[in-house]
Each structure stands twice: as C-alpha cells, then as structure tokens.
Image 1 (tube, chains in turn green, orange):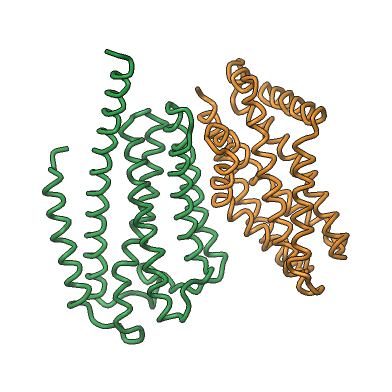
Image 2: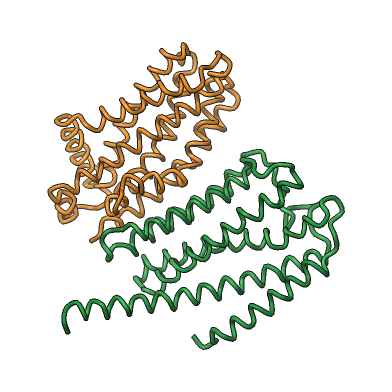
Length: 227
Length: 224
C-alpha cells in the first residue's frame, strides 16, 4: 500500500472536522423538525456506508471462493467488523432522531426492520467466524454465509416495497417532489465522504492487524514445534 | 439423472435412519405441539383474535420445528465420520444437498400437518374452506426455508455450539420467507382470494431465490 496510513488518518480527521462544521454551522435549519434534523447528516451516511460494507463483505467472499486469496477473505472480515460498528451507529442515531420527530423510539417499519436485519446479518457472519472449530474451514464457510447474507440484503430492499413504511420516502433519488436543498445536499455528501474515508481507514488498519495476527500464530506454531 | 438417483438414495437412507431411531420427527412434532399449546394459554384469545394470531403462530411453530430437524440432519452424519464417507464418494455434492433437503422437507411437512391438525382442533378453526391454497403457500415457504436450513445445518455442524449457531444464521436470512408466508397465510385464512396470487408469488419468488443460492453454494460447504 503506497498511501501511508498516517496521511490517511490526517485526511480523515480534517475531513471529519469540515463535515462537523458544515453540519452544525453551515447547513440551514430544517423548517418542521428543527435542530434535531441535523442528525440526518450522520444517520444517512452511516446507513449507506453500513450497507456498502456488506456489499464489500459480499465482494470479498466472492473473491475468496473464486481465487482463494487470503487478502479477499481478510477484506471481507475487516469490512464486516467495521460495517458492524457503522450499522450499530445507524441503530443508535435512528431512535435519537425518531423520538422527538415521530414520538417513538422504534417502530417495526420496513426500513427499520431491514436495517435491523442487516445488523443481525453482520452478527451472524462475525459469530460464525468466531465459532468454527476447524481453523482451515473458516474462510470458506464465512464466504458462503457472506454471499447468502448479501442475497438476503437484496431481498430486503425488494420486499420493502411490498410493505407499508413510516420511514421518510427516499429523500435522495426518490422521484419527483423529493430532494434536498442544495446546502443540505452538499453537507450530506461531504459528511458521507468523511465517513467513507473513516471506513476505509479502519478497514486498512484491520487488514494490517489480520496480517500481524497470522504472523503471530505462525511464530507460536514454530515455538510449539520447538524449532 | 445420475444426480437425482444419488439424491434419491441419500433421501431413502435418511428416511431409513429416521425410521430406525424415530428421533428427529418425534422431537419436531412434540416441540411444535408444545409451542401451539403454550400459545393457546399465552394469548387466550377470542375467535376474531385467533384469526389474527394463527398465521404467525403456525409459522413460528414451523420455523422452530425446522431448526430441530436441520440440526439433526448433519450432526448425525458427523458421528462415525459418515459425512467424510459421503464427501469421499465419487458423487456430485449437489446430490447430497438434494437428498438431505428432500428428507428435511418431508420431515418438516409431516410436522406441519400435525401442527395444523392440532391448531384446527384446539383453536376450533376450520382450515377446510381454503385448505388447497393454504397448503400451497405453506409448501412454497417451506421449500425455501428447508433449502436454507439444509446448507446452514451443514455449516453449523462445523462450529462449537451448533445448536445456537444454526438459528443465528437461519432466522435473519429466512426472515422474509416467514414474514411473507405469514402475510399470505393470513390472507388465505381470511378468505381473501383476490390477494392469493400475489401473496403466493412473493413467497414462491423469495423461496426460489434462496433455494437456488443454497443449491449453488453447497459444494463449497462440503469441501475439506
């Protein structure tokens, strides 16, 4: 990797500070929801990144089954761990916003349900990795679950349309009449960029950690065998 | 053809094992009857409420009974290295999947028949007016659910605490089969024939997607 991690971290931090400035000082106040609407600029990018994260898990899983490359499996595993954190963030920021606006913390609306399922899919994937008894089989089994899980995520977004929903209709690319004011749009996109940059940074860190972990296990084996 | 013949052999083998031990089917039936029984007292319900609760109750009973069966399906093969024997045999892995899946399907279908009979009896509810449509919806949903259960049963057999691992994999991923199945069942039991075709198509579509994906990925689960 040519792009040094420290530089990546610095860019992420500056970008996040810029995003915070835009969120709290630049974006205009929403007329009906007021200040609380500003959590949208965190909530929406987190949700999109969490979804994208599972897509990366799928890509890594496919890559592993196809090429048997350790890097593809590490990538899927790293994206699952970081994506799980982001998805948890969605489930925390959502109710914080819903309580003042809808008057309830949670409702089993289609979009909330499917985000919750995405969170469960992350848990299933990570728990499977932790519980497989034969270490040589983890990668293949996790890849199979990663792919089926992604199919489930697609089915989710298909089945949503057959369900009534309380969640705001897609604000972005949701057809005529939807859409954000230009400054709000800009803020949302910059904030998403910052979170994507953070996501990439954490995944890269986690990839390095996976490499170190393997090295450590190798050394332990050598020690145990007495060479 | 060859694949189907081998699948049939495995299917018959599973039935024979079950006939000699009578463990899986018996535990599935008893467990699901207990669920129906407990629900009755958890929600001592009037007739109109019964109609509202029954579809969900039935699918929960099917789902839990299925988990018991899927767990047994590959755990049994682990004993005496039977699974290794099957993997080493020069046969197509998808034949193993199909044979296992049809055995699981038969066990779950028998359990479902028992559950529906008990529900009709204990809740004083007649399924007869819409029995054909109801059976079709249940069959569509069950096929997808069993396909997922077969591949996840095989995956969970490789883990510690497989009894826990299987539902953690199975429930989130089969969620839409259960929800759409419950929705369609509810329409059918209310005599809402206009909604039947759309409901059945949704359940069948989602089931088919998962059945195909499970079938395609199964060979990776078996490789050692």
